[in-house]
Amino acid sequence: AGVLSAASILTNKVVRTPILESTLLNAKLGGGRLLIKAESLQTTGSFKYRGALHRLIKLREEDPSAANRGVVAFSSGNFGQALAAAATTLDIRCAIVSPHDAPSVKLNRIAAYGADLRISTALEGTNREAVASALAMQLSKEEGFTLLHPFDDVHVIHGQGTIGVEFLEQAQELLNNKEGSSKECTLDSIVVPTGGGGMVAGINLAVDAHQGEGSSRKTKVMTVEPTGYDDHSRSYGASQRLSLAEIYTAESDDSDSPSPSCLPLEKESYPIPSPRSKSKACDALMAAAPGQITWSINGPRLSGAVAVKDDESVANAMKVAFDYYRLVLEPSGALGLAAVLEGLEDSVCGTGGNGPLLPPGRVVGVIACGGNTDLDTYSDMVGYQLKSS
Image (cartoon, rainbow, N blue to C red):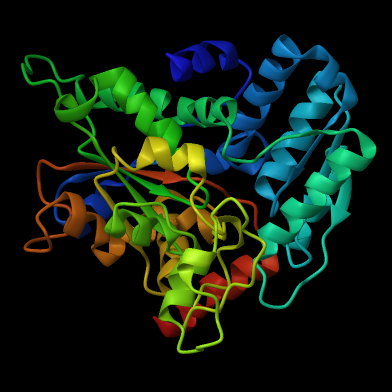
């Protein structure tokens, strides 16, 4: 009910982003249908505007005094832009704390949308978002801002879930427009790039609202993460919420590292040993752990969780998005397409890797979640693929 209410509230306030399809790429992948939900065309360039706007509307409705004090949140860039724009639209004071190494294009736009931008400093061995989160909490206490979480918040989740509401409606319209067809078609799976889990939690709730819960669900939902930031993949495999600190401390050979049992998930500012290899490009998807609220939703509903092999795979997906859809995506925004091209979606939700990536009759949905990149980064990523091809 929450996602459907959010969809009603946000009608005509957010962009109903299009579904893109390429018959050429469909044929190349095996003859099925690949549908891209182009959230990179959303206001502020990412899906985050949905959750940010819905959160502020609900805050003003439920606690006007909290809204009047202004809001603060931590963000690596996309939620910061979204919250700044939404706050300006609603005339709410806003401060954003961003990591020291967030892309300059995102930081500049946060300020341009009207937020009071603060930059957190680097702490060696500590997750960048944990540091920014701690500073946001400090600002809330010292300057009276209302602290908002970028993903582990029910109203944010419901706002992000409107992506799923739209996608399922649009796919149903697209797939069931053949005259004389008696079979009702829908998406077989939705591939969701994931950091803290707010978007995929909202999409899972949208699938529940559209199809029912449990075995009645026809559409499988899976997460994809950057290499080295695979907390959802590891959590899914372990059937429990795990942080990056637990994962990589357990794998570290350093006997002086604290044991996982000593690392409470609610305190994510402790040192995090570096994974053996990790993405440097997917800055929007580097959360320290799945959210507590988001994991309570996603844990029992996910059909799978994977991580792409490297940033080269992401760069290839960015190039494919441009070649076949004329869509400019940031690295994090191309992660879902990378999972399809790597065969990860097929291995989890399809044939198990025993046939073409997208065989005839299958319909796979991908969230292209953001396009906030600068020309230099984009040309470096896509240009590398051009030189290698």
